[in-house]
Length: 301
Image 1: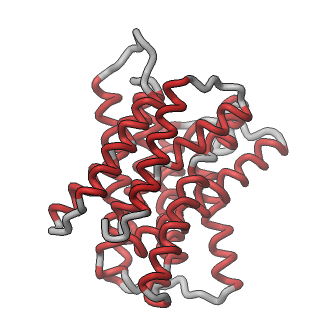
Image 2: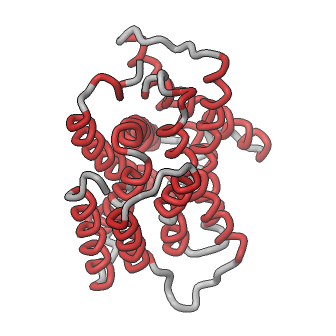
């Protein structure tokens, strides 16, 4: 039985909020591991293949030790495959968009996913309160300040489309995890494992079609250490806590807590890689934090 039913409503809200923050912070550590790998010459598809593959292996080991079941029903399997494709697709679309638009603009467009989540929920006749909408708008404004592209940057329409597709894929994943009755009995571990396996297969197939070695660029102990870190922190931990948060407090609030992703990434960039912190970015951080605090103070929002 899924974790959701094991806690009282008040406990679920607290756990959901904590998991939402952990999911955002852990996913925001991507640059800490990915940047050295890219600098080492590891192709994106190779990095994504090992990221998902190692994470799937570690999660499988954890489930074996806890004697959890791997099997799912036939009517659950197809939806779990779709979830894996949506999550993996979000990563692919984002990386692809970097070739056509600045990464700052891509980050801003991808953070449209809380808006998409809220709109999808409206279509499902679940209406977020005005406090939640205000939090979404405020965090989006903060992200624009944090990652606005430099003047004169080349912007191609295809890059915008790809970044929006990344946001829409991620939003769809969150909503399905929360709202689908077909997978409500599937544990967070099993749900995450299937998503990771689907992603591993997808990235392996794309790398095979692309050509080149599956271990290209992975030449040192440091490379393998970074791949391991990438698999554990921004992948396995992030996906597990994301699933718990979405089920406990809903996809809309979980998506707002996702603002901790860029905040963490910017902090790592400033402290670890010497990237500048401007006054505009400082205001963006303050707006984002204020919006999250406002949302948390409104339990019914």
